[in-house]
Image 1 (cartoon, rainbow, N blue to C red):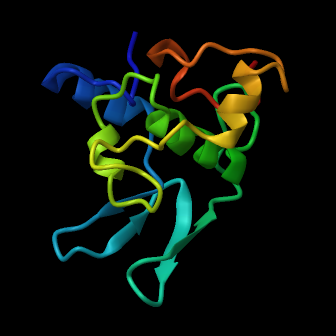
Image 2 (cartoon, rainbow, N blue to C red; image 1 turned 120 degrees about the horizontal axis):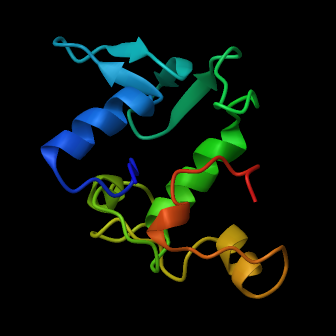
Length: 133
């Protein structure tokens, strides 16, 4: 299975980078190139606002939403989630040096405690759009 959150080798990284687009890419001069996000703006280089491309869709035709982006980041940061890229998220407030959030996200705790339909938080679920249950 090709999972962009848990890539283990160069071939897998290459294939997942073709299948799953990032919000933005960086060009050789370190300027943002739009991908799933039309823009990525900041005034202080600490807080960033991404404006998603209204035409971005999942393979089932559903739009890519801010909730999907949040879900993916929270999945990567969940202490029980296996992710080879979690350390890239260590710069996010509330994440530790390994890119994990203490205690997991509120959304995933609710799911584990019965607040919403339970979903496993293993890597097989990582990277899915939130609307897929």
